[in-house]
Image (cartoon, rainbow, N blue to C red; front, side, top):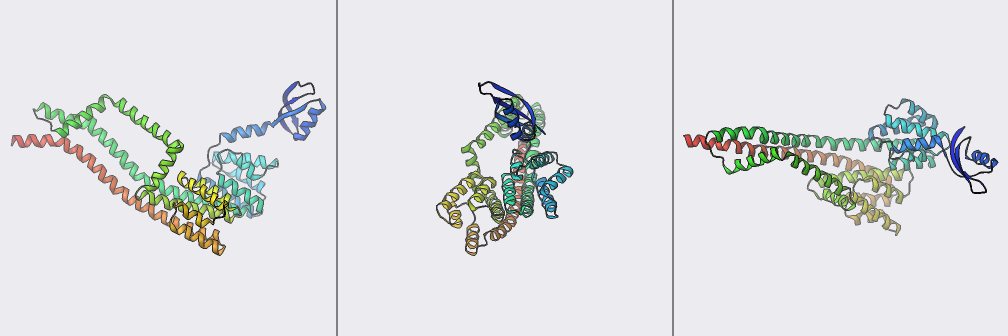
Length: 402
């Protein structure tokens, strides 16, 4: 028997509120009517607590989500009911965030909630793609197959993200090391060198005087420099979060040399894979494109895909509408056109996604191959400039003595 918090009124208009036990809302209404009260609002206390917990749930990471999808599919495929499978997964899941969400989903499904709606009520924990796919699987009766597709999708997404992160580690380490070395040389090493030279009667050349002035400024006004840097970072993040700033930054990234091409390959792979997964699971074309648009993670591409949905509503073919965006490689709309003519669009998109997955891997490799020597050159130039500025007055002194 559940506990309900309720508000009610009687015929005189007097308001009542409290907590009452009942098997369901219908019984709650009946109990209140026997008291001459008419319900205006009622909530299950457990559901209210569950919603509070769900609102605090963090977004589930791709790796545990992929494992969850594959295990869920395996259990259902082996003949276990979806509800029992959820209970089993709740018992053995080690990820605390995912475990809490699965537990709440299990409780809500036991009460008669649809599984997709129970997942949707977990706040931002589960992606929109996952929720829509579960809803499709429930309707079509092929939830195990849908979950397997989701497992494949999230495994590939996780692999792609890890490659991008790995590609950026070395340049970030080099950049951080360069900054640390420059600060140490300017704040500690340079003043010592120049102090020895000046005390010996030597004269500092212009390049050294400039660096000394910059070094003294850093030591005296480090708080100002730090404040400016923090202010710029906050301003930049605020600009990127604004609608115009977000669109400008996403557009700029796609236009950058080398980086832009790599990003377009990643976007193309994500678009083809997601759209293929949605269509093959039975979702309508327009719904599939709208969901895909929110997953590609680029505001410019999102806006363009929204125009694609409008064109399709007006009777345009997908391949024609995609071509008009001018944001995807030619192979995308050519393959979509082949899929439309053959009636095998989902299969064609799957193969296209596999191709662009390989292309994006190669593009990331080329990007890393370019960034590594570039960062080394920048590091060498900056540190070399400081070293020359330090030793130049010493060379001048030696030549003068000679």
